[in-house]
Image 1: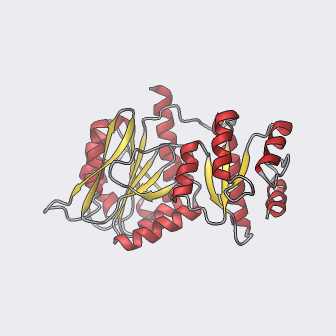
Image 2 (image 1 turned 60 degrees about the horizontal axis):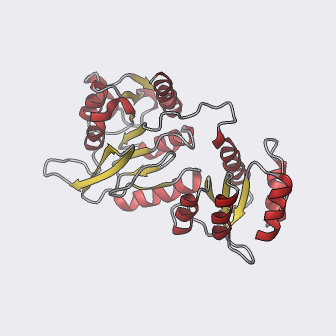
Image 3 (image 1 turned 60 degrees about the vertical axis):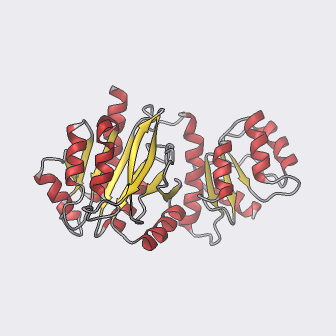
Length: 320
């Protein structure tokens, strides 16, 4: 596996493989000799496991690390511990060497190398931003198009998608496999970090956001008697309205008008607000309702929403 991964990494024109190691002791020696920009680190190693090695490495010689494992789920306990210790990404080893799987692995390594700002990509100096999405019918396909457009280390993302909780759980598992970011349910008292993608659960508890102590935090409360939807886009959007200048929001395809009132509140408080264009919607209900209320700053085709929203927030951060 080590030789195979090494050959795949070396084949990427963006990367240069400077060494491989079979153990922690060998890894220490090669790191000293080659001073690599990024280390890929397996959780399972002889002598010392990868998590323990990571803790020593980050204390003595901090550097970007991509954790690899055949059984590493990005939201599992090992992955959470690795990220807490400073790992840049947690990636499952490709079990089938498809070009897509190998490209994602190499993309994660490149993204880790760019964490220090040495690349020419826009950097997120404004860490107070958050991106919100609301969607219903057709939203899964729209989100699978939009989310890969977002910066890996950009503002946290929170999504309210009308769908039963069991389907949301499977949707999260699929996104977590496909994206380098951490994807999970939005849990009460979660402190959102850069790059987090959180999906509001559908369990008769409404998901809201609160900004305090220099970070966005998830809050939840019981579904109201008059709440037609749970999760509710209006409730999510409206909760962030007091901090509108820190928010970018997009209302995607769906039946009805959920999200229109919340988006209007956001826009009135300085948020950047987009709606999916009619020609790219499966159902042009929710975006049309928001447009009719003058809650929408711009309409965009689904292929451009993620990039456009990121650009607007970067501009705001640079002028703040």
